[in-house]
Image 1 (tube, rainbow, N blue to C red):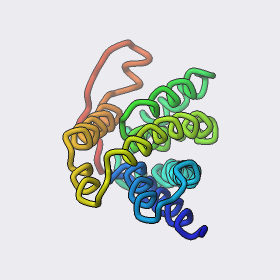
Image 2: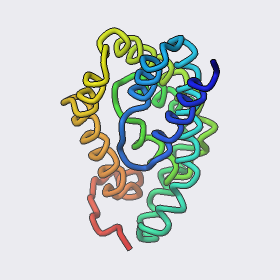
Image 3: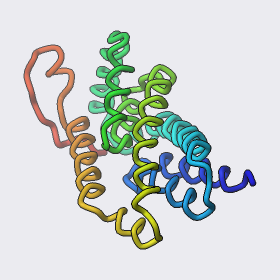
Length: 197
């Protein structure tokens, strides 16, 4: 039966396509794995591929969203970061890989890279490898502990998911409100909260 794996793929894609915080893709994978008694490895492959495509698409449409919502001066500042990061070589994929190994939401990562117009193709292999590894741990742990739907619903509102979401908001806020040009050129930390149109 291939359809449940298609559902895993589509659900992971949709969850990671949105620019705000929702349930992590691994919860979707655990749900379908338990609901249809699916092979964990096939669930991981389908889910991580869906998640990777979702994040890639997010990084592609977020610049248009930021152009509509954020002041041109702040967009210029964010583009400046992108130019600086393009010259960082292997450091960016290494950071992405290590970041995705941690239980942190990847929304800020792809929102920031998309707004800075960093070519997502450079970071997708590192994201895929890190995401596969961290999701493997979460799905196998979820398979062990989540024996009914109530456990999954409680997991969505656990202190870990709330803390992870709040940390993601803080990361995006820091990315948006820091005057990056001044920090990188003049080595001065300055916050600018007047960024919205």
